Amino acid sequence: MNITNKKLFANFFELLGIILLVFILFFPIVWIILTAFKSGNDVFSLKVIFTPTIENFKTILGSSYEFGAYYLNSIIVVFFTLAITMPLSLLAAYSLSRFNIIGKNVLLFMILATQFIPLVINAIPFFTIFKNWGLLDTPIALIIVNLGQTIPYAIWLIKEFIDGVPRGIEEAAEMDGASKFGVIWHVIIPIAKPGIITATVFCFVIVWNEFMFALILTNQKAVTLPVALSYFVGENGVIWNEMAAAGLLYAIPTIIFMLIVRKQFVKGMSAGAIK
Figure (spheres, rainbow, N blue to C red):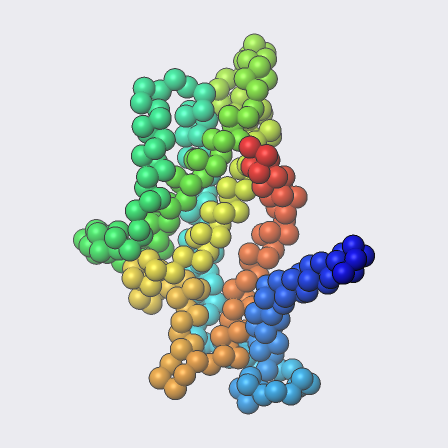
């Protein structure tokens, strides 16, 4: 086999690998989209051509499923979790990056160590606490639980970006009369914006997809979308067409959010890779 044939052989397998990867990544997405517009009889049909229908969306958005309420619960939990997480994490990350705090390395390790603990271990303590406080089946319980996951993660990620901001820029701003909060607002946030956006995206995904605590701590009023999707599994099997329609609606906020912040997110990921 000469060099030309070897290159063609290698290129063939490279192309084949790319095709397989694309198929593995996009097949579930395509299947969900197609199934969302199929009737119950067409879900497992081998027919390539079928008559699209929006009855699945009408059904899940009807009063029987209360899908709109679940959607609103998810949005409320995500919004308030991020609204609390990002300011607190930014201030904490700045303090850990710029101030000489006694035992700072130990504190950083303790913050990171909270992520090593399996979440299921905290399920019973949280359930007991929220039951005593009367917070079961409320968005507040889910927000508190999610803060325990998002704040440590955001602190570590944002701190890495703040560490890369030259101190000379801050000193110049302080010489011009800027306060610490002024420095953070006018210097740190604009420069570290890609890192902050990246942390926001990851925290959004964590909270939006959180299932275990939402299942344990809610029952009816505060049920979120990940738990609501499990309602399509019944005694007679899975209602695939309606679940696919619900899954499609479930993915819309994530897609919109990523489209809005995609440029800053790519910058943040690229900067993180360089670090």
